[in-house]
Amino acid sequence: MGRAIVITSGKGGVGKTTATANLGAALAQLGKSVVLIDADIGLRNLDVVMGLENRIVYHVVDVVQGKCSAQKALIKDRRMENLWLLPASQTDDKDAVSPEDMRKLVHELKLSHDFVLIDCPAGIEQGFKNAIAGADEAVVVATPEVSSIRDADRVVGLLAAHDVPARLVVNRISPHLVKRGDMLSQADVIEILVLELLGAIPLDEQIVATTNKGVPAVLDGKSVAAKELVKIARKLAGLEVAERETGRGFFSRIGRVLGLSPTPA
Amino acid sequence: MWKGITGLFTGKPSSREVAKGRLHLVLAHDRVGLEGGRLQEMRQEIAAVIARYVPIDSDAVEIQIETRSRETQLTVSTAVPAMAAAGATGRTRP
Picture 1: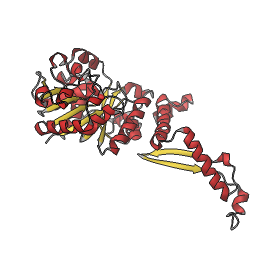
Picture 2: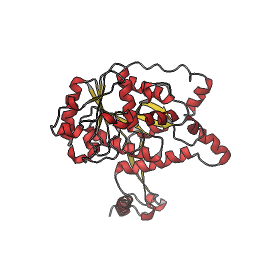
Picture 3: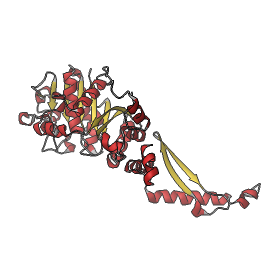
Picture 4: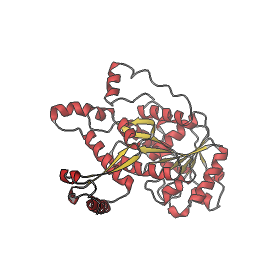
């Protein structure tokens, strides 16, 4: 039996879909069998971020309405073994699916895959309730900004009310701005949200280029963001994460004391 | 701490520090789920209750919501005039 993880944030535009695509690809590269579900019905995007938009035949609403089986609707990512996408419908609205539908669907997919990653829509209404219904755990994505953290806090409260344990990913952190005192550090975000940190993804221009091409950044694996995403995927899979030996010197220790460098886990 | 150091020279907190302060305040109120108006209503009612026992200035009663970890704490504070405190023994209850 696999695990279902919902990727959520409350606020839109913080990188949920990009994180879902990359964590899915990274888990598949680790040899896990992974299904990505786009739960943003009416505003599907995971397909274009994955570069699979031309191959959609069926979508999640078709499956829920019994027009086809879940297995038939899955699109296989040909770039690697073990990665599938269940796209959202672009024409229906959120009410086309109920939390009970999602619970059943996710359960079915968990029987045949190690991981089911659910890309949650922004907001906390019907789409959110659908997306978290079948989830065993949550990854809350927040950027180091007041608005994003405020919304993330609301989502953390709602997840707790539904007994879904949550862990944190801080996205688009700029060490340079943190150092200058113009950005919240990952330690600040952890302190405020009181969540276990899975990882902090640095602001990285290369993500823009890979997303343009519809290729998850972890597939080339060279950018700093990709490295962190792979690390997060390893943590999700319960694998050992090699902490880099750099960052143990005098200056980084000072930085750590000042809250500038990541605290060792 | 870094902003503390730069603050020593500029006298101004860093934007990071400002963001943190604003978040603590906003989240405390979000977590309690009380809008500003309801909070003031509650403050006035609490002040009225205290004033039944101790002569206080109702306007000086303050309500503060703070979060530590995920615990949210509501603190009501007010100054009690010295006279009232001294004369309080046995005579405050109406």
